[in-house]
Image 1 (cartoon, rainbow, N blue to C red):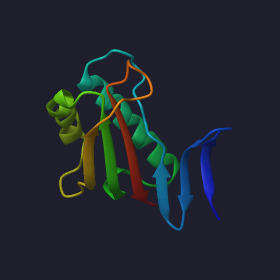
Image 2 (cartoon, rainbow, N blue to C red):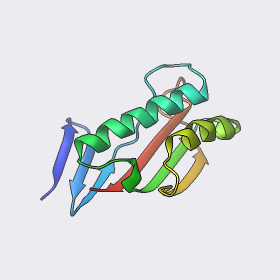
Image 3 (cartoon, rainbow, N blue to C red):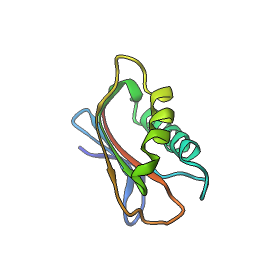
Length: 114
């Protein structure tokens, strides 16, 4: 059985199957904010969705981070490092990519155990 969280006509914010939760890409709420603010907003959205799924950031298996400008790597990492729990860092990839809206600096996709 697949459980869908916040399912819409185009996508779900998360899907749970066989003890794993797959989150859609999470994006910031504040257009044009600095990279650390936008990253903190995205991480808060991830925390909220993981909680809805019965999981948390300590159970993240993989994170994919998309930056509109790779020059924001250090700023994003400052927010990430303050958020990730020591000893629970997931496998992670970070790439530069053109995001769906020019106001967004970061988008993060995670997969976690439930």
